[in-house]
Length: 558
Image (cartoon, rainbow, N blue to C red; front, side, top):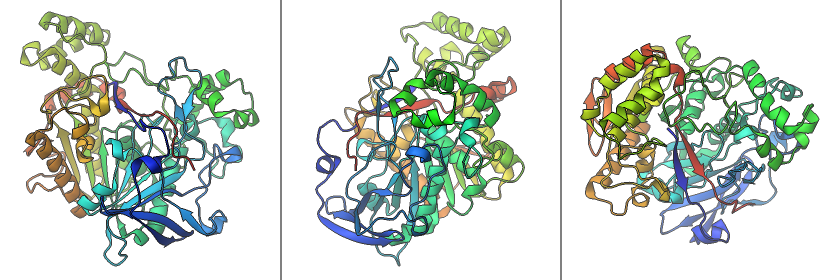
């Protein structure tokens, strides 16, 4: 699905500090690198520490290198008291308005900072910790979007009695460029997956410091949505993650992560050619704008990934940003789990029912629907197309719902079912599965987006968890609010106990939960449909289905 979560961030000029808050009182906390100054806001009822550096700025010859943690042994701590009272810049990403691919960007390379929100600084009453990884196809996004409905807030920390952490991590070419020439001088003798290394470094920071913020380093849950969910899956498959977290919630993740470094190097020659660089020195001397402009957004390897919200095209596979690099991922996560080498923690796997189709004309009748499905699926074989029409009959629902459900199943739902089956067989810890099926009370415009969504759209669960329904609907009903309450109580029970709130919600694959304003436990969701797609090779087209554009201007830089 090409459903774009369009977040209109920072609509006003001026500093983030001036726009978002007026601190009620400042407070200092001592961590492993020295004193940091945050604030307590009486209206939110929680403490905020914003823009804390967790790694050295990845600039100059550190651009395509593993992150250098900020700690005393590396000699990169600060002097005096570090002011952690305002957000810092997001990591460099293409400006969403740059339709001509001119290299326009927002953000900064100096972006490796994290944020902490806590209801208490009592180090003896340690609280669960939730570590948020935002989505955005690994090409865009930011850690400071909570006040716009896509991330944690101080109010959430207070209401959930949880310590929340979010971090910026390197994106697009800065975070995931894999080239043989970039291996030279790397302490890992690899290239790529720098964004995942940033997350690992942030999780290590949590282990070292979160107790000072009232958090329990032995109760860390990682959670992410869309490509953030894919990152959660990557961390589950990485041996470097062991001991850094204890539960995982992945929403709308990609189950496929098997591109080899050799194949990625071949694919990324398109970037090398566009950049005009024949050697690594030239690459390091490129400006950020030149790097952004040199990426093949619309040609193979399709870094723009603009086909993911539609039926797959036979034989077209987008290039991969995440790669099996031999360090973060010695092998693909599915292979690692199949061989008993993944991280064994309780896992919650989520998916939505419906996604937005980018081009369908919803004035269609049944005949238009059938013609469209045949046009898209006949290249895979006429039997495929006709069987799909039997499984998703035109008269069962609207053409809109049938088409988007079909795309959602073959692109995301069924692939995540397969992922869950592998995880369930590989780990001793419980694996739980749900499908978000809530239909909003009215047409939803997530974050002011132009496209209305009438069904359980991509991201509906994470947005409900973040109390963002009020930003999507003109009028919020009791049912809408109960949907938010239900997803929150199920997830928070999992965070605290390793099991959902609903008592009879059993483990996957025996049971799947359908989440609306209530929780219904079933033996499976679209079992026959998924068996059809998976048996006919469509798992290869499974991927995270959407882009989360958290993009406007680069404000709040330090």
